[in-house]
Length: 324
Image 1 (cartoon, rainbow, N blue to C red):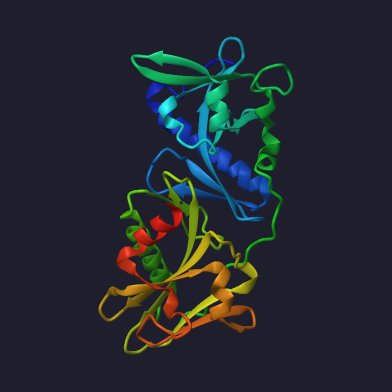
Image 2 (cartoon, rainbow, N blue to C red; image 1 turned 45 degrees about the vertical axis):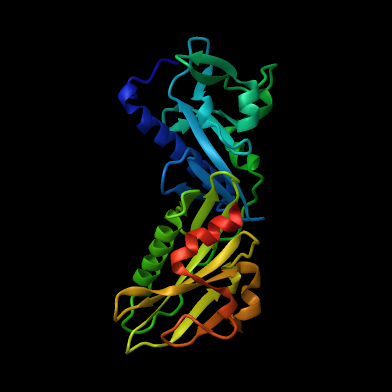
């Protein structure tokens, strides 16, 4: 095909972003929500993380794309060798063909990409190139890793899951729970951002248990957080944290972080709760559809949860130590 003149050299980054969102859209559409996408809050080499809800596994992904074929009908994907830093991360390479991805997509882990790619050195910098055609079969070394566009989600081992119900925790009169919840999430993100070894991601859209995802840049391990904010003032002292049982998915890599917001002073409490999701049922009280944590009004403590108290100031270090 002829080069797409709409994507000139100055628009390379925009074309790459289009490819990324087309890949994310295909994964969500084909899995019917079984795959959930997390996007980075800071670019540290990973374009996104795909969360498979059926078993809680995470896959770090780099998306590479071209907007035209070579004269011999191939897609050429070239990356710097230094950009491949996690052997288990997946490279998803594709053609952006008008409004769609190409009929076939290359999905291969970084270790295999490095092994099979052509290596070139230009001005002391090493480059890796994959050249593949948009059809299955053949004797190309890339053929085993080509996936039909309509089966892309299958490559991530997904099955469709039931729609996850949104949680309505019954806001107290005169209190904007949504705003306070957002404040709490942003405070947790800020504390985690102080840890230099953590790469942070947010889900888009926010439809699942994990609301903030941390990935250690050296160990490549993941830890997901669901953030709960309890607020109080003189008129509202009831401190209860509700978690809907039907939509809550436990995992050893998922934690509940409860932060306290003092509305009168406009500040967060010094301590927070950091509870492994697999232990939540041990300390929460079941009320029908809900699991509920009770805290002492105006304080972040209760005899059943005191062992989970950590300093909010050191939250980044706490997560860092778990993942290191």
